[in-house]
Image (cartoon, rainbow, N blue to C red; front, side, top):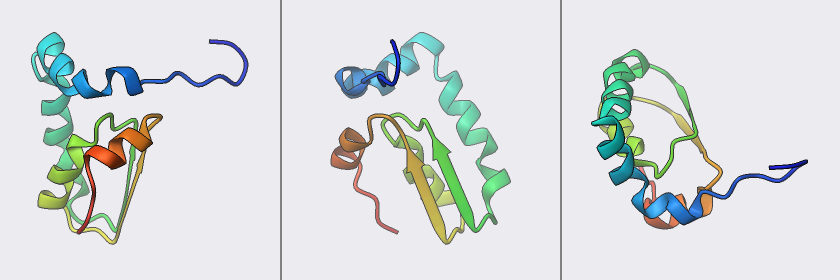
Length: 86
């Protein structure tokens, strides 16, 4: 990667959740879910590098918030696969 080039993760987005779970035995997801109660009463939630957006549904279930911002380099793919509505 040189200069202002950004990595493109769209090519692996479709297998990201599966490979993440297999390679790390679900450790990342367990860590994310474990810390969600800390956000329960947050008015604004920012998710950076949320991958496929799988965490969003869990945030909706466990947190009361007014604003959720999701940022990922593969955002176009994420929006297409995980439409969000509260």
